[in-house]
Image (cartoon, rainbow, N blue to C red):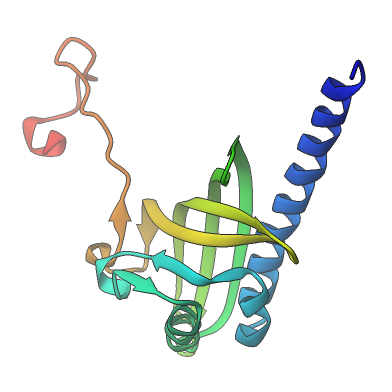
Length: 172
């Protein structure tokens, strides 16, 4: 029993590694437009919410993949770059918050960049970690209609903390 904390630490490190690989595989296959391979990333009963202008919450892996196929077909190229990931484990799986920069090039050569964070619920199944639910939240976007996103709520500064050049109009 004395080595149990060591085993828990090793299990934690292994799970973090496996989840990092899962998130990276998602980006790799999305950027390659290999939608069929993305089936290995999501649970059968997954839920994806990429924002109101992107279909809102979509339930079920087949529907999620069909939506991704349609949306990603709009782009000639994409690049999804992952930043930091915060993981919290519990008895049922893990919650992840991952920052993402997603560059897109349309078929007309126009480009857009979305600065996002993925809020994921992950579950461990027999064949490994899977995304049970994902909510994409925008922190910024250039070249995209702003109404299509779930936006991260950001507190307004107190008047005492507001920079001198911010007007009341800018705070709304």
